[in-house]
Each structure stands twice: as C-alpha cells, then as structure tokens.
Amino acid sequence: MFGGNRHQVLRNRISPDGLATLLRRLEPEQTAVSVAAAAGLPVRTVENLIGSNPSLPGLRTLLALVDAYGPEVLAALYVQPPAWMDAAARAAIRSDFEREREAARRRRAGQDGRGDTDFKAGVFTW
Image (cartoon, rainbow, N blue to C red):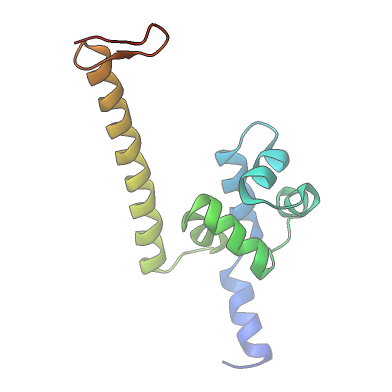
C-alpha cells in the first residue's frame, strides 16, 4: 500500500468530478468567482477545479474549501465516500438546516408582535 500502489488505489477512489459538481450546486451563479470569494482562493484556482477537465485540489486549496463549505467537500471527492465521511457530511448538512430553521423561527417570533423592534423610530413594540 505504499509508493505507487497507494497512488493507484487512491486514483480509483477519488475523482475531481464530484467536487466540481458540488461547487456548481452550492454556487450556481458565477461559480468560480463565488467559490473564490467564499474560500479566499484565486479565481483561476477555482476555474481549474470546475472546468471541463477538473483537477484535484492541492492541500491548501482543499483546506480552504473545507473551511468554507464543510466536510461535504471531502465526501464529494470520493467516488464512494467512506461511511464515516458520509455521516459527517450529512451531519453538517443537518446542522445547517437546523440553524436556518431556528433563524426562521426567530424571525417569525419577532414578526408576530412579540418583541419586535423598530430601530428607525427608536421604539420597542410589544
């Protein structure tokens, strides 16, 4: 499993196509520019990841993408992600969904007359 054999095994398990698809799904408008801004990467680097012949990211690029988008980035690189990685990606997605749902609940609670604040008028409404 060391040396050339290790690279051959990884080559069969990892593909840049899944990452390109994920990034296009997450940032459907101006994908390269949007991903570059979110991850702090050069636009050209992102273009290489999502082009017609996508390349695998280097370590720094990969870490920037994981930092910006979570473990789903790692799972997207695998043809078939390991179970633990798939579970981590799903947990991150669930966490994001729950956070968004809680924010929506808080907005609704503020809009139904319970503790809404009108900062322009400097008045608290109850």
